Image (cartoon, rainbow, N blue to C red; front, top):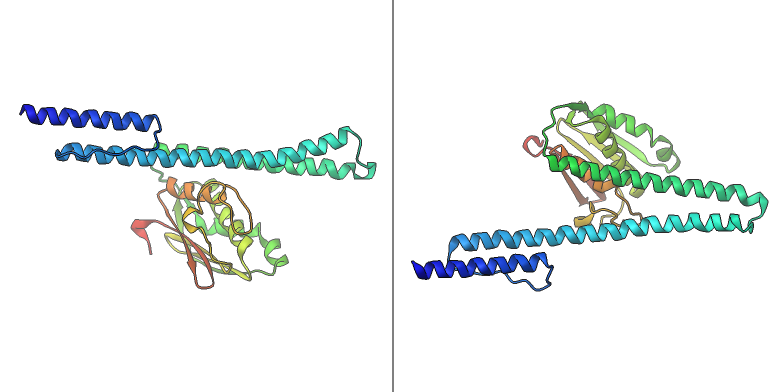
Length: 269
């Protein structure tokens, strides 16, 4: 008995050291192995926790760097334009265009900051683990959102194929409108000739006939750069809305294009 207690205490001390090393962010942290099954189970959980913490920290660091970069560039443009205006180095007939540029860039920054705040709010709501019983008419939301892209579809000669059935999704109108707008924006950006939208009882699919996605596993990461150099938070917001209301989202490269599908796992058709 005393031998068993001695070994157990040694294992607990090793786990304590392991936790201390994790807290101190040491690069080389090796998990312990014990003859005691309970100690081994505890050790496995601690190792999993460490891996998760490292992943969260890496994601946070990367996001902060990307946010800084995405704010620095437009701020530099604004400051440069203001500096030129102050030094009166711009011909009078061009002054208006510089003010327009400052206004446009500032509005874009405000939009990006609002998106970041929305993403943070969504993640907070997810952490609360609330159950949502309110439903929204997804068919009406899809049709409403499509109106915003009419001019783009027409000017870029992109066809729209619709297969819409009546469907009620759990959640709020505001969030689902945001999700559909983000998915449509993504689809129209990459589509060559058409976008197809399928809405069934418990699922929404949006397909575009563009190029396949290269880094498909990280597509929902904040500020992930797309093939044409676009970065942002749109797809991160999409993922968070799905998580909040207990919907799955699937993105898949298919023959002739890319498919995004949202569905409820227990009721998937």
